[in-house]
Image (tube, rainbow, N blue to C red; front, side, top):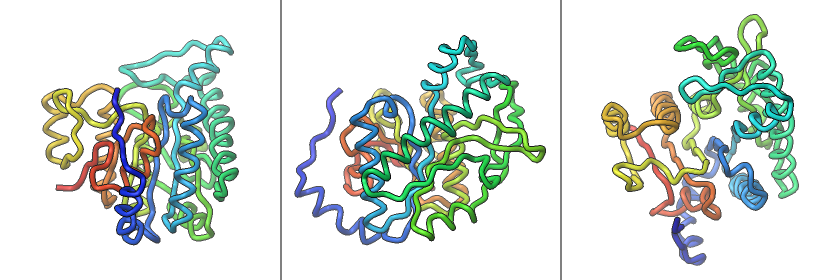
Length: 282
């Protein structure tokens, strides 16, 4: 894969109007995939979100951790099952999910951001009933939840006090039962609830490809048409469906970017060309 090359001075000059435009606004960054496995990429993303906060943009990070959950499950001899590409979460798997998402991964991200001068606070969707859910009922996935409500006040209070929430995608139902939540969907729900102007999905895919070509710009209508035609398929569907829900909830714009590109987050936000796919309302 060939990554785009940007001249540093051009990027800096081009960034100024965007910095002015987004000062005081809120971005939600969803962070997952292979980007979470490489030390240099993990440190780079921590630097980038800290920089965004330092220039006056409110940042909320939502993270995944599927590969780490599978790895720990294997070490504990807990069988991993998938239903149509989605993890089946039984009692034992749910314990692993909580350990990995609310524990090791969450605290590692928080530590990296704080080392770079940020003020990150790690929470899960269980804390303060941040993510209220009901059992996902389209098919049986065990303890997998569908978001019904977001405690936006908790997130906004943390942002107001200068903190950067780092959120593990767990949820709780009305009876206090803990559920695993798809991180893409959790990020979209949170972005809509807190009136974020941008939702950025960072993973190990270049963006949305249409006929093997990266689409830099798509509208809601185009996304729906490409899904119906089977052109957008597989693991990209939850991302773009979450993007559509977020746009319907008032999020200004959704981006899908390849976190393997150096400082992809900054390049996507602060350059006209960008490096991924942006999805906008019709």
